[in-house]
Length: 230
Length: 257
Image 1 (cartoon, helix red, strand yellow):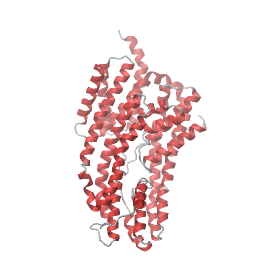
Image 2 (cartoon, rainbow over the protein chains, first blue to last red):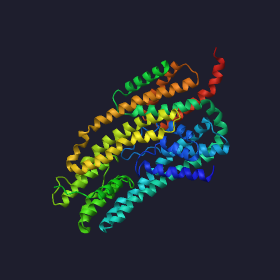
Image 3 (spheres, rainbow over the protein chains, first blue to last red):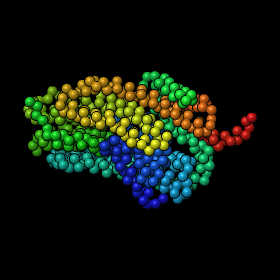
Image 4 (cartoon, rainbow over the protein chains, first blue to last red):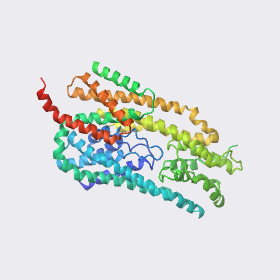
């Protein structure tokens, strides 16, 4: 994997990571956007679409409500994309099985995203008392700058998560490739189907809507029937 | 006649609201962002000495949905303008923030995170499954249209109406809209699931009816999620079973007639 690949991934990880909480929130942080964006910059947008498709729905049900910090699916998507394209070039692998191997290795490292994000928020916990002191000294501009400095900690949390995922992948992918790739070759297409289905299932299981199963069953059945008959 | 804030200052505040959560923390949540957004208005309305007293009221806990925060801040600007003209507001700034933030947060979370996000994703994923590179753009356009409208209209409405703007949620029937968006999302997710299943089964030349057997799997995973099992655990459970199943499938096929 070249330094350029790592750097491009880091820039995407930073921009998309900031979009998660700290800035804009225009949803470029969603895996269906972040993974194709990283893949497009690295030269193969199709891999990004595959990864976006598989990751997007997995944690949709974990809403960023109040003090809840969901797992960092942004960095999972970006990290898995960089690993797939960067290491794929080195190991001469470009199959769906290799993409899945990188993704399945990246997914547990997403927990680090939660940890780093929480650390950033805890670090910000000293800002209210600092702000109060600045207010007593009538340093209003300093209070505003103190707020903006939060971008640094959220950005750092995103970058650290990305680096942990990529570093973990760099160690584990070569170790596990020979063992798991044959099994993933056989199961690849099934997993490409089942990962979005797991995401849909978790949304169904947690969404707060009356008759959600009826609506889902009816639309699934109708669409299935149409595609069967047409 | 209502005193107006220069459009440049309003634009400045609105842009600052895009950075509302920069200093998000567990003590005051978006409190730092609230002061950051209001600062240009306070500087415009008050002198250095008065500002200290006023700014103290703007520090502290604040938490609402980031897309509906402009509506709250817009109304707060109107309240500050009235106060600067010597008209005592009927509620304190702290009470106003507490009164408005929680309902806006609840509706915003249900509408944008719980409804619109899966709805937009399901449409984009249908396109991604067909390999169309416009899928991310479609997601961004579908998802952002409504939040952008709320960010702009909510801000201007709050600014014009002041305290009266608290009827914003009811006037636009946002709780109903949230439920309908969620229901639409579920219908689309059902269609997406059926499409993905049919796509694979056609590709593998497997009888299509057997795809219906995946419904219990979806419902089973949904049940596990409802019982509090983590997504990570479900993903690895399903992945492991799939890999093991596919690994032994060839051996099983040999024994079949």
